[in-house]
Image (cartoon, rainbow, N blue to C red; front, side):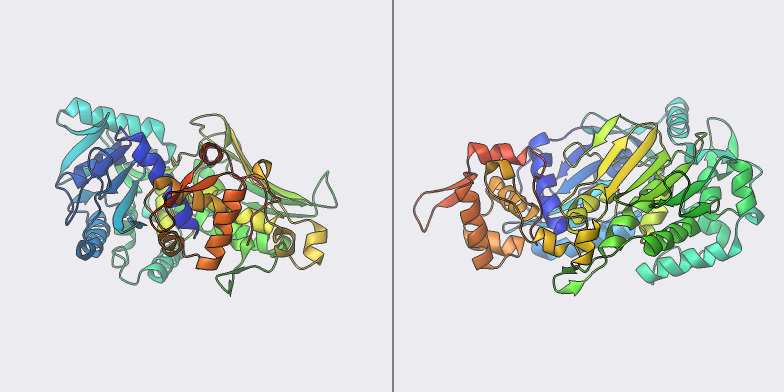
Length: 497
């Protein structure tokens, strides 16, 4: 349900926005367009972007043939792993999205800290087109831009294979195997694995070659990391009773793969995990939320900055603060959120080993699950040179009464001033696309039982967000002016489960 809600919202915004430097439409009705991989390469080399397959140049949804969907998705996944075509390889995860009776595919391409080529040709992006870089000067400028933009790319010529922890290679292979027993990295030796992950670079602009800062942070021995970034430290504290010092403390100065596990154990030791079910299955809200928070402070930190990362548990909240290279300043919300990795190589490996779902998922997933965990409260993400995350915690009264579900069952307290919950917002989004003329279509797409859907429709109608136009058998629900306005606002009130 979570991915469907935000995919609906994303697609609507993308179609309205139209093609540009970070967005491309391609018809791909029965197969990938010839220029698809050129666009992928150009997005990698510029600032990332999204590709919508099954959409024409004017933003009209034409859909992908049913028989071709799986073949196209497999082609994207396989070829993004094929270093003979895309060099270096960078696995992509296409998303199938059902819009009424039409299927489209969304491909998120992140900005990469590496320079990528397709069939040995390098492409860049300008406005709404891709162009090939042909001169040595153009290519050297691209390498220089990547090096200056991403400190994880910094090369250390004297960093050798013996400076890495041997057991980490086995750990990473096991994590990869858990996700995909046929993963292409599993058959590579240690040095080949590092190179395939983009952790060994040749810098044409500076004439340097060797392992990078990202390699040291992921696989380095403790003393190796401290010699390269001596200020690196993650300080995890509990300040519930003793606010001046701490009740418990964990100091981490080792590789990011093991640092993640230590921090998650610290979270498990000190934070509550209220009972919660999703689709009849109990899941850990604590894990869902804090795996994203912990991964974010690790893979999006600026490790060359002379600051360290802090993770502090208070009675009513968790505050995390990590050095950052801010692209903008101020609070990040679902409305202004634009995923852009600070360390694409670190993020790439964390995605591949299952530590995060996908680029930019942390803010979306935390906003979705936190109201169930912390009695309707919302997280805060504040971007600056020190990136700050604030996660409210369940209060003691809620914990004593059996978790947050009891506090959330009340849902929205009604009226326009009460806003909408996330289920109502997804329904408004579906209606606004005008692709679901009948209630049965809405029920099928959103996977909502007909009776539940009817109650939600009547609730939105009573709030003045929708009206029914036309005859009973041929008409459809449409948004009112107030309904249009509500989609431009943040979700208000508590979530109803």
